[in-house]
Image 1 (cartoon, rainbow, N blue to C red):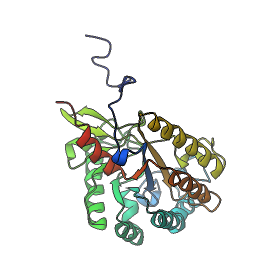
Image 2: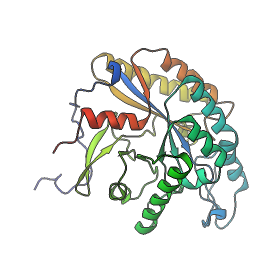
Image 3: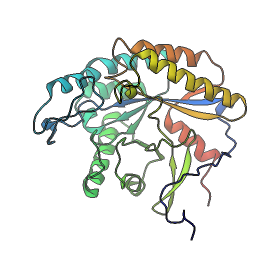
Length: 305
């Protein structure tokens, strides 16, 4: 037995030799825009939680035990009331085939937003029934929440989701995704610029990694981005590098993650427009949803027997 035989992490990956990737139309880079729809599913005593939400909100602060934080609640509401609609308009006008990560409870609380997403034709992936940390949630509850998330999206959007992303998963999440069935991929990973196959519950399972890197949450998570320009510059540089790699015969994928209550603010949303301007000025870009990436990978890079 080697030191890695019983170690559950994969620190090796493609070991510098990924498969020869050929995106549609010989694109240099596959760009996946993701909009997280979470507002109304976060921690809140109104939802039966023991404390208020405290992360990814402009007002910050510690969670209030057994009390509402009206400032946090109002900050989240901006996302569903205003930011969501502005971002959807921008994506529609530019013909961007994005993916919506939808929290079940949040979607159910805003039928107008659900109807807009259904009309858009954008891919809708599961983002958990709640936007909470599932780390210590009992397995039976997490499984029930997973099934509920699938049911709500299928009912409100009119098609079953094929993607999964919790964001704050438990050690059981990926196995539960595989055991539930019906999913083409999950994105609860940040460890590669290409999809890869994992072995889960005795089956091959596709992972399409997400990004905390090219993510507007950095405007609030740790405060390393202060303005929309910071977000734009970082994502632009990441895109330029990956586009360059593609030109050298090493195509990759890039995920850009958005939140309506964050990038949807007037002082930030211009950065999203400038970023899309920059990306769409380039040739050799496949702007696509995550289901399309998963489908392409399964056809061209099937799991090993």
